Image (tube, rainbow, N blue to C red):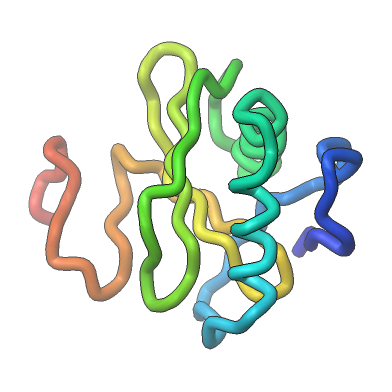
Length: 121
């Protein structure tokens, strides 16, 4: 699982995406990474997120926009919108890893809401 060792703009070349079966408990490092992401110019943040999305084997040619959208179980959540309109939610973990969630097909655990195109699975 790729991790962010020292998050900085130079990190843009390092892998960010990771998938986890069980989410860890929130910690201070997730908030620290979130603060650093928030401090980046949007273009640099989008470059970090395109790498995370591609490392998660998802199709996205270009991240057009990104925004902090809140938290889930204490972990910061970002939304990334790709060219063509596809969106992903990116959860930042304690060790700086990211979990990429395709908004079109996934629901967050414990979240009673589903995407508009969900079939009630």
